[in-house]
Image (cartoon, rainbow, N blue to C red; front, top):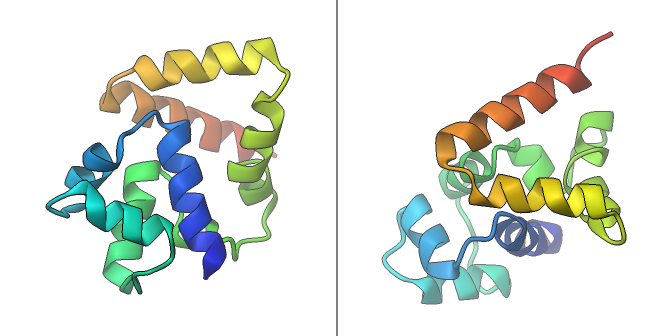
Length: 118
């Protein structure tokens, strides 16, 4: 389960969200709860894991680090590793971070569709 907590922190930072913004997105009152989650001090219920996954546009299994599918490997870990030293990837992520939620969702859906093409 430690992967779950580190993935939440990594995805929050990748999405350029503050702990307060993430807290509000999943229904917590304040950022201190997110700090506890990211430090692994809170046992998350299945419904809370689903809320975090929805906010980050990943599956629950991907968020927990349990999904071995190519989509998962091309997701969180691959994206984080690829960004380092890749100016085009960094530029794309910066633009993504500045986009509103509707545009982010459209980008994620487009990428998912592209990954699932035969």
